[in-house]
Length: 526
Image 1 (cartoon, rainbow, N blue to C red):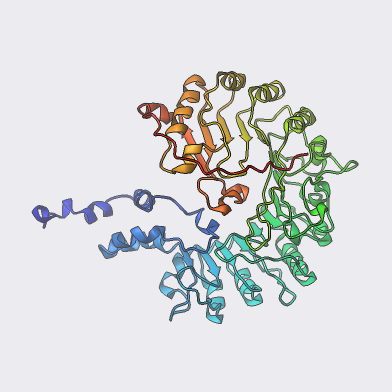
Image 2 (image 1 turned 120 degrees about the horizontal axis):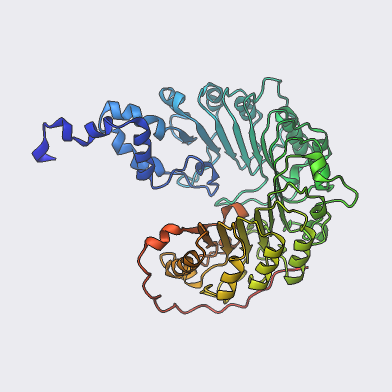
């Protein structure tokens, strides 16, 4: 900047200060490389998020710029193990999200949850989201402190341990809470196996649900923590309900679980095999509906989307689905990877085989308003199958065909440019989005090599002019075992829009690397 020294109109700082705050925020997003305002607290791997580190030097240029950027830097914070146990009071007004944990990746020493922290939480006026990922029992004082946070609208509890003393909340607790997520397990650097959930813990969870039930709009809970008390809780405002992990014991069919959710719009029952139990009743297939149960539209007239996992193709739930349903997703969720188990690679999820997928399509043929459909298969999706789907649901706008891979090195097609597949997809006049969960071999070998996907995406988008996006998954991108056992919401998608047609034709693929031979293990199918 030597030649321009003294010319304030040309200084970068002056230029930035002349921009509207919303433009500065966009610059912060671009410098970060990723807007993680919603992704921050999904990081349960034990590592701290450092995306704002690139913004810190920018905030050090002048006081005015620092005042503008500070809210962006301090909107999300962790607790830590330093001389100062809590955050400086000068930034309390800026904190919107907190992640509380008992250890950090850079320091193996446990982090003490102090009384100073408990006193500070209710005094954070802008706090809207809190995430707990704790190894030990959650202190009662911590939950009480969060219940008094005036603007807290989202609470996430991972690796939930609520087996302390019996909880008690006043009517004024969690007044603004609308989203609650409680899971009993999470992917971390040091996993812990929990095989039992005591009566005290289940009772405490139910007391918490009874407290916040009248206000919640979104609830995601582990089936391990559902008891008979759940059936009596009122959910007058609940719009989205998700059950994950393992089936409740005793088991309750879906109509009973949603019997007090009149405003429910999104339903997700994503049970997985309980790899800690040998009892076959804890493994797929699961039965979600009941033969003599009520139709779901009688319980939730506004239900528009449903996601189910690991159910049999003859499940009564299909006949109970309302004709108003616009989205149906049949998946095969896997239990989270547990390296301490003797056989963590047990393939107990239940994708649909060629016969069962046809039964499912027939069972849901009454869903004439369907515009989104996901089918997870144990075989490569064929043009014949897509034609069958088109005959039943010609108005689809979103179609996902899952084909999970089970072993590193299993042979899969590297090129989907098949005219029969194209002709089948062309039968959907309103189709806008296609997702195929099929890994490309070279993508797995080298994450930088995207040429095969770009070539396939261009081929489909060129020949299907109404198609807006085509996506492929890459959740098996390397040889690390845990990449095969990520939960459904952690699947990585590479989405190509029509902008890919503006690119130059990709160069020819380099010669493939030599593959390690492996004996594939087929999935369990009905």
